[in-house]
Image (cartoon, rainbow, N blue to C red; front, side, top):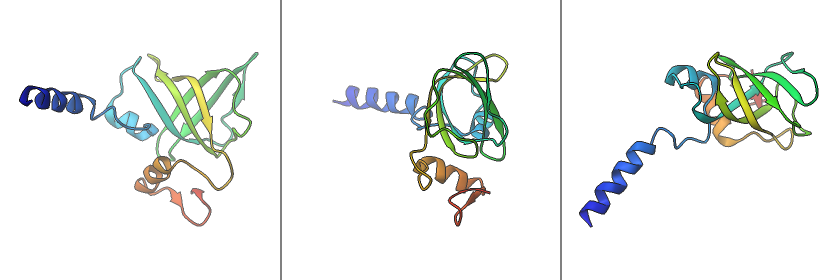
Length: 135
């Protein structure tokens, strides 16, 4: 029983940094996330940053209004994907610091943003409570 308890403790300790729904651009910079590490990136799509390439290639920038990360996504974006709206992208950082996403999720209406993202934006002091979005 003691060995099982120690093993469970070691597993929880090893996973403690990875048990996060997503990272904001500022957290990725602070933690020094290594290229190739799989993670979720959450924030707002920066205004004027969304560019469509050939076919289904999309380039945009995710920001928490403090730091930004360029994102490349090759696929169909959700219908509700918009600039200045909340987004969560899943994928990996490449060697140049660009986030290569294989999944992109957008908010489902104008009043909703994932609670974790709202909380993190509030911690950074960039959440505007009256408007329901970042300042």
